[in-house]
Image (cartoon, rainbow over the protein chains, first blue to last red):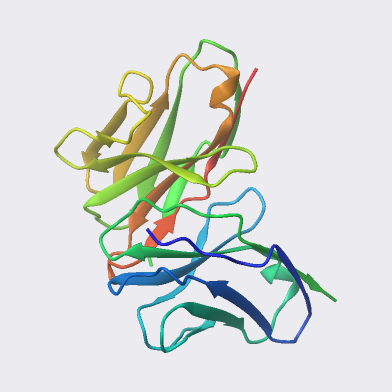
Length: 110
Length: 115
């Protein structure tokens, strides 16, 4: 699997958009970009995934660059409950061996 | 999305004992996965549990230490046997999504402390 690079931490004001970058310069053509988050002592929560097109769901938007070497997760209106560690991973469609890196610790402040 | 119920949510156990963790899914799923997350670490896949066949274990994990049952398409158990303090970890059950197969959904986890 391709490795990813994320900033260690990020602060965000409540109600503002949070933009979380992820670099995955060695991604292969058939690997997907997935985002999960983990709130302390809970299981990881799926957020969104994409292959090459931008994606949006009720939780977030995912913007993937045209060369697919990086992506950005956007939380449009951050709330205090969005405080968590956010993980960006790249993985094949039928591979279930998830491996999270250090992720980005996002702290939403009132 | 699948709803996964995992229990117990946490337990404190004595060295040398065994603990069985249960995972119940609200829909039928082909594959279930057991992960471990040690303090401050990433996830590690322990094994894949398919109904009707023996679980497939990842390197470093063996059936004698982590026996798994998968009696039907909605349920699985993982037993942590002959526990030692090194087994202290969060154990997570995971399934692929039933409507969109690309997603993995996780249970809330079992936080295990071994004294």
